[in-house]
Image (tube, rainbow, N blue to C red):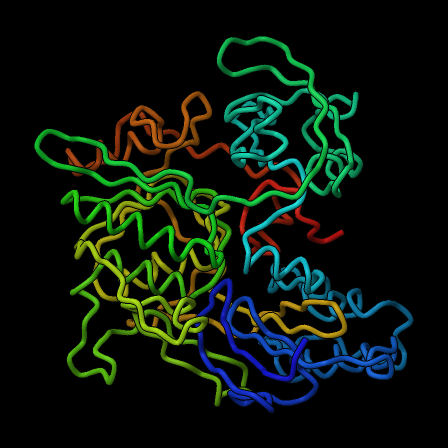
Length: 479
C-alpha cells in the first residue's frame, strides 16, 4: 500500500481521477484503495488503524458517504456491531436490500489485484451453466487450467462432484469444491463427454493460472464479405492489449460486420468498455463540439453527497490503462461500424452492458442475440482497507441519450439458447448462427427458442451478483 490515491472505475469503470495525498473527486472519509468499477484509492495501514473497531468505523463511514443507496442502508452503528468488517459491509449493502443491490461485495485486496490487474485466477478453471434439461454443462474451460489439462471441454455434462450426484441444486460442499478451491485442493468429477457420450472420471487439483479474457478472434467468410468474431470474457487489464490487437487484425482484414460474444462476460473496467466502444464505432463516436472530440459513452451519476464525482466519460480512442501506466497515449484501431452483433445471456453484465447501451446512445445499431442481460447499470470503486477490497455500488451509468434504466436487463433482439454441442466461434453454434442469419436476412431465425438456460444455481448467481470477471473459476469470491 502507498499514499497515492487512484481512481479507476472497474466493472463500470474508467480512469476518472489520479491524485496523491487526498481522496480526490469529492472523496473524503477514510477511504483507502479504490479500483474496480470506477475508482481506486490506497493508503498505508498500521496496527492501530487496523483494529477491528477501526475497520468497522471505516466501513460505516464508507457506506454513509460513498454508497449509491446509502439512504436505504441499515443504521446499525459500528460500536454495536459484533461481527467482522466484511460482514458488516455486506449487512449494510447487498444483504440488507437484495432487491435493489445484488452486486456490492468484498474480497481481499490481493484477490482483487490478481483478478482485475493481472487476470490471474485460482481454482480448476471451469465455468458451468444449466441446459434446458437442467443438466450441469461445462460452458468454459480456461486454457492451461487444471480442468483443461484434465481433458474437460465445453458441453461436457457433469454428473457427480466428489462422489455426490449433481441434482438441480448444488450443495454448498459441491459449490466450494468445484468453484472455490484453494491451491492444492482436490476435486473429483464424473462427467459424460459431449463428443462421444463416454463416462469419464477425473480428479483435478486446484492451482493458480492466468485466465484468457479473449481466447478467440477469427474471421468468418460470408460470400465476398468478411465477418469478425471475438469471444470476449472479461474487461480485466490484460484484455486491453488483446482487444486492440484483435481489432487491428480485423480492421486490416476489412471486416464489414462484427460479432462480439459476451455471453459469459461479467464485466470489468469501464475504461476498457469505452475503448471497445470506440474500436467498434470509430468515427461515429466523434463530436466536434466536445472538448476532447468524442461523444459521451457513459455519464456517471453518484449519490447526492458525491455530485462532484459525476463524470462524463467519453468514447476513448487510446489505451487508458496503458497510458496510466506509461504516461503515453497509444492510439487504438477502429472498425467504424454502424452495426454490431453482441451475443448475450444473464451473465452479460455491467461493463458488457455499458458497451451495448453506450453504442446505442450514439445510434450505432446493436443487435443482441441470446438472452436478457444481467441488469447492472451501476458501477463501483474498489476501496481497500486493511487487506480487504470493498466494492459498493457507487454510481449509475447513463448513455448519451440519458438512458440507463435497465435494472431488469437488456432484452435480446433474437432469443436463442446457448448451444453446448458446438465450441464458441463455430458458425453452426446456435447463437452465432442466429447472428449470421440475421445479418443475411434481417430477421431472427425461425428456429429461435425460448432462452431456457439459466445460470448454474447459487454459484453462478454469486458470480453475477459480484460482477467479477467470469472465469468459472474458483476465484475465492464470497467465501
